[in-house]
Image 1 (cartoon, helix red, strand yellow):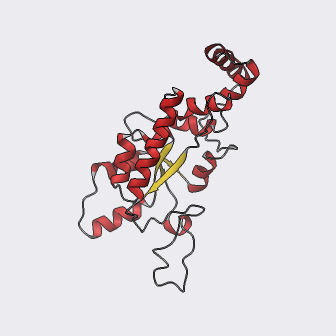
Image 2: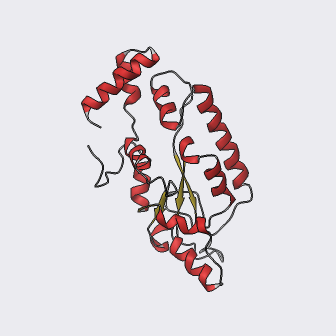
Image 3: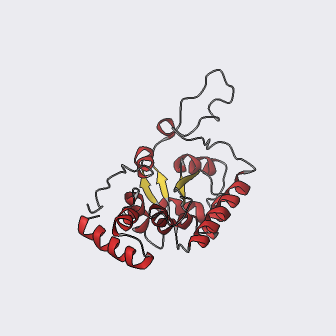
Length: 211
């Protein structure tokens, strides 16, 4: 975002919320602006989110050779999530987190996480919200929750992983990919390293983002 654009937004924010220009400037200067830009430019006809393109051996941590289930227990690099396992309590925990985030947005009068974060930087709301990726391999009930609750608006971003591997397994067992599962192939493709950079302030610089 250009300096001129930031200044214009800051003046508008200061007028709308009755804060100083200095606080308004800090409010509109989103540290995760590259992630915000990526999400904002996604096609409306395609599910909001990302599909990680890394193959299994590059995506997952090395298996423990002493563990009989070592291959299945492999986590995504830098993430406490194992694609091979399903967690019965995951949907419940996700629903609680969606509810918590929705309440924070309602209390602050924000339309989405980005408005809420701006208010927090201006000192107008106490709690901050960080966007987080929600990894999945097979489309399950958790993804229905995200869709129905508009997860990206509250900062929970769907991230499909190992889609080629899942498709191969489904075909081997004669299973049909659901339409929602197939649509994950249309989401923005990205490597794991690029994705994780988007969730850090230094960001990832895609070729099509304006400076």
